Image (cartoon, protein in one colour):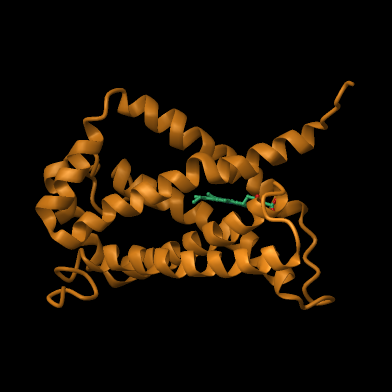
Length: 223
Ligand code: HEM
């Protein structure tokens, strides 16, 4: 039996899959590395240095992060432009989540472009011009210096929040669309699990950012 898959179907499935593998996996690793800042500058700088010593790191970054990210981002914007939000007609939570998934996608597009040009390549005029990846010994100080600038720190708070929302809701969408979570009750319970996951990720992400300007992070000195 010949199975015919339309081009749009395949592109759409690849878009959904790229959101989970590798982007979600990368984000978990990224939050883990950033959380080393809670233990102090030396611990974070060592983690950056170890990442940079991965063999073929540039190829790993290009194939494992940049290409999937650019595909997911660009095709995500195409999907967003084709979207027909109907929240005003049907104010159900799922319709709002549909709209917020697209809004956070657009926010992420600009935030990730800024973040990568800034810390990975040191190319934002007026901010640091050193790539954190090239100077692991200065990594903590470069990030800390920028996070002390209030508007930059606020941009990161918005970016982290948008990323975590997009990921937590994205995992739910993926599980439902790929037929992993079937039935009303299972979908509701998976929804609660994704909310719990999102809250934990948000706290971990914000705590790591705070650790660059307050030793030990939010609970610094208490733990
Ligand atoms: C960089 C800009 C980004 C844009 C413009 C974007 C856009 C989108 C859009 C429009 C959707 C909804 C697709 C649909 O309903 O069919 C989506 C889904 C998703 N995104 Fe993103 N995204 C971006 C970055 C990311 C990042 C960094 C991650 C990982 C942390 C991610 C993970 C996901 C996941 C897991 C889904 C759910 C896939 C599904 O619908 O089954 N996205 N994205």
